[in-house]
Image (cartoon, rainbow, N blue to C red):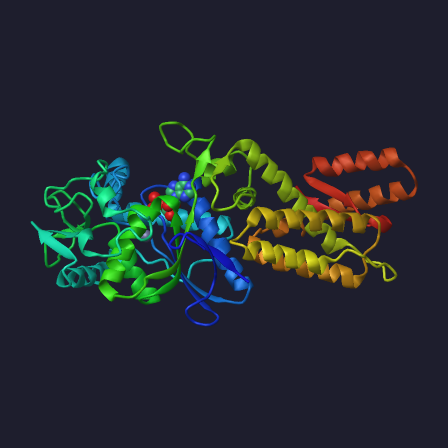
Length: 477
Ligand code: AMP
Ligand code: ZN
């Protein structure tokens, strides 16, 4: 039975979808003004793992992830992020390109990261700039309902008018009033109101006609407008990083529920921040990494994915290079395991007593428990170590082996670990030749020759793994 932690109710709840067998999920996506950093990737890997697990236990998932290409202003430190420069415009000045070119470039790079990390692609990646009519329509409804007000071409949401404001973040308007970090805008009634539409300064490139001004949308409204467009008024699951609880998701609720009068999302799931060397990532601290920094150090995207899965999404994860090295060692263990089960020739008279079915059930139970990936991985590594022992002792028959293969396939539907096929296939003839010679040398008890041949194989970039009965497997390093 799947249980998920819901930020809204602040407890783990049994998951029940709105429609039997179907899940509607919205993931707040990247602001495409720069490369996604490894913290962003942690949050997206969580969303991908959640989708994978839902599908693995039988749901049909409709997944939408937005691309923010306008309206996200730089004043992130001020909670409402309603002031400062537009992140897209800032990047556009930095790189001397149009905001559209910036968005296209970084969206492309984001998709490349997703591919490398073996993501299942969301069914749709809507862009904010392609949904201005839907955004305007929604803002009009909010004004009509008296939840929003216009002033000097700007439109703000009056949070005092929405009775449930604060229900996600558990913030009270009375406390917000004292929050000095909220941005004062001369046209706002209250500092904690937030922008739905802003009048564009003359030099602003990204701007659209609207009933209020030539301007651009506030950051939060795009997610309300696009999720309703693609998922309807109520969805099952909405995800993001912990920083989104307030104000972004709180404001999404105010906008969407204010508009429709219906519950916006049944489950709200948030990922704790990734830290680097125990600190918040920032460019000035020099601890800011993107996926290509990891690849440049000789690690693979799968090493990184495995590292992300090794901690629970609701705990802070501290990224260190040592941790990545450990993940890389673990990935090698998984690769070796897969090679061994692919190549092992079972003996008909053998019979393993290990209950691999139980292991698979334990794995699923761990994942069903609010996606407990560290526990699930620990179970996988037990399966691997038991399998290795059984192979070494020639204890597996065909049925045992088939069950192990089935379990691994099912487990990996959740984990999404893609081991490059080149690790298994297309071993060059000369390597096979050396391996055969080594096998002959071993049979003839010429172990020093066998050793020399092994070294030669390794120098050429391959590892040789002995299996019982004189068999072996070759893995590309
Ligand atoms: P952004 O591109 O800034 O809109 O962020 C994309 C996603 O990454 C959002 O869901 C953020 O909450 C999330 N995020 C930002 N920084 C981190 C971090 N250090 N660790 C985990 N998630 C993060
Ligand atoms: Zn969002």
